[in-house]
Image 1 (cartoon, protein in one colour):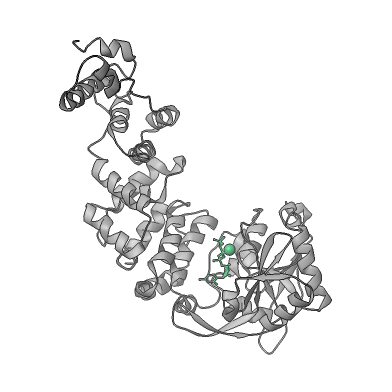
Image 2 (cartoon, rainbow, N blue to C red):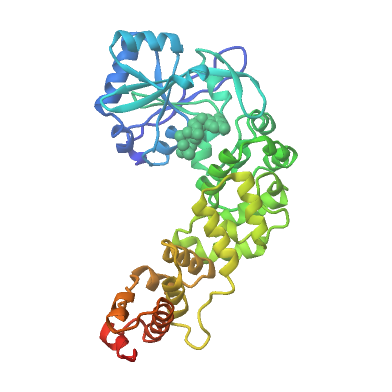
Length: 427
Ligand SMILES: Nc1ccn([C@@H]2O[C@H](COP(=O)(O)OP(=O)(O)OP(=O)(O)O)[C@@H](O)[C@H]2O)c(=O)n1
Ligand SMILES: [Mg+2]
């Protein structure tokens, strides 16, 4: 990929403070593939009105890492009013303008949405929201962003604009805040969790943190208390299934963050580290890792009150906490899936197989997990109707007989067919 990138150059230092802007040309296939009819149309409108339009933030980071970004944000020198006029004149539809206060206009071209945000400075922040002021200064916009690797812009001609050594950090696998970590965190405390999430994505070693970053995080952890559970949950769930999650969660505990983000203050970190090792290569669900921290079901309830997880996630966490020791492979027959499949057969819940899969990941039972993934739930072949036809009339008796037949069927490893099972019924 790098062979297609021309050599970088520092193009100058401008303004009264020393500014260094690092630029280079990016021409990777991931970048080229962004140029749909929609994006070409968008670029044309901005070019006509001589407003600059660049890809911003996370998408630039992803492109430089050789990844096609999932969502692409654009930044521009045009104000929201100018954009609205431009789009109206060009007959381009705009949708849900609720981002306008923060400078974002969403344009729809060729069935694609493009979020374009006016360059801005956050003039006032309360740790969650920002009052913004628009600017035409790209560096100012870069300055208000969280991490150096997230602070770059990419022109549509492939020119990279990098004010804070984001590219160098990305190459060196370093995660650093733009300027003062403390200030960036105090602008939005969620950035503490973003730091850990991106650390997992970028860093090679588990403990390559800047000491001053960790100090800033420890001293500002309490600010997370004011951040909404939903926002915390999104970040936390991404982080716990990323690289180094065991180290990062342990570090978060040692920085005393747990209490502010719905995790038990005395969470079982050792169990979590074991479970992480067990599960990491098997695409665990976030709750499978987090469940290891909970010692009691009440702690799951507390987490849910704070993070407002989905019903499915909460049920999974409660299930794992309840069954992690209770439902295990049999010592006499360790290769057999039987205890697990019996549990699934007896369960009335639709997703019990997927929950038991998570349990096997938790327990580190790789072989059984692979087997259970291939297993499809067999159908119990006898119905109440069959028994009635054989003359069993009382509802109570039908229920009891079905239960007995089920047990026989389970013992046969679900092999017996209807006739074999009915031969046990006295007619
Ligand atoms: N608390 C935040 C959230 C976002 N940003 C800036 O806004 C960009 C876009 O934010 P978002 O889409 O939420 O995150 P991404 O970095 O794009 O990560 P992802 O790949 O998860 O979308 C970020 O790159 C960063 O420059 C920030 O500075 N502080
Ligand atoms: Mg993004």
